[in-house]
Image 1: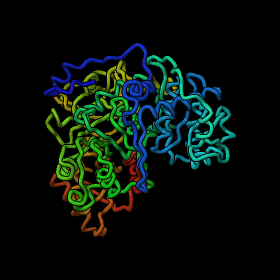
Image 2: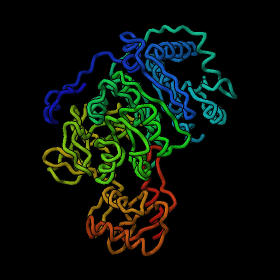
Image 3: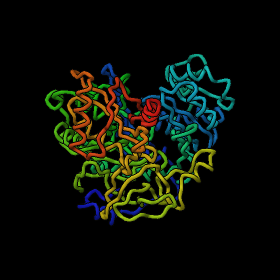
Image 4: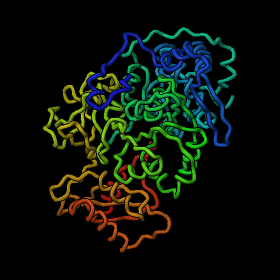
Length: 543
């Protein structure tokens, strides 16, 4: 853990050292260890949209996960076998992961909105032996079961249904005692599938040490998470690294209660209400959620909140969102950075660091993050290049599942290339510029879209914005903006000119959008990021 009494970033780094034990199991660390010390300590709160809540202690999670581990073992699941978890935020999601990990199996978090084709690829590629799901997931699996010969057992939390057995009923017949499998920090634990720019998704395989690797960044981004009274929630689905390993597992490891709530449809008003009703002290809010919440008028007076920390990652935050967060939440939003293969490696921490809007932060203690060229050679300060992380590193993935070629391509020497470009100054502050394929080249300038998007949402007419390069014979590319308007505004040529001028006067003459398109919605990933490649494809078609 980080020294919570550190007075400055330099002090934090000087006093930090990795402590990775020879034997480590995530399931034991986030459940059984606490159950032995404080069995009645609150671990999880299930808050449903109808207002009903249920609380689970660490002893509850241990008992339920032990029963499930015994059930899976009885069905022939062995250490190293893969177990799919196709569930939203709910208690079964937590104890399914805990059970599989204590068994020595490898969990595969799966998003409930995946269609049959997406599920079929991931389950076939991983060779999953069992899946824990709900009625909706069971129906999808039932349609593809014939193409998944290695899938032997499907259990549903909603009771018996076509192609799935009743999870609760079958767990009842098994003991609530279980001896966890003895795993090391490098033993496989979790496969998270991540989409690249081309081809099918790749399974990023992580060892049990990945949790320990996450801890410094999680603590730092929440102004030292683990304070008395901390209580955390995120709208990010636990099927993704941002929900699972940035919130659920680290919080349980620290003894911080986690609130589980899966909105059928996320709304800013519902988020504010939950923050108030559940007395949330800490939250991870992706930038898209923040932008939606920013559009709610008078939020500060309509809801009573008592937040201690707000963290955000996935897109660079700008001055507008930082200032809005201060006014609405009464605190500074901490930005962090990482990716599925190597997460939580850069962060800000308002408790001990100055705030620099538009700058992600500094390397989290324990991670060596630098800017390198394509050959893996470090570049001088203030030079644009690849954001890279040096191996070995506890948070770094073991490799892509059954894809050694892709694993090799991810590295340049000992540097893992994130696929993002950025600039690092002499003090170590890192500014995200964009994905390699997101950087716009216009009249010899290399332009990152994030800064322009941040500027655009400051315009009172704009709710959301996506910026890409559109092919142009004269300039190579021009900056094109796709914008979603706030209520009360209508598309017009005059408004497009006004928006372009708005950016031109606030950033630079070469960065303003020479074309502005008004759209009803932007293509978004399931984690709330703008899918710029789809916008680029649209811009190319227009050309």
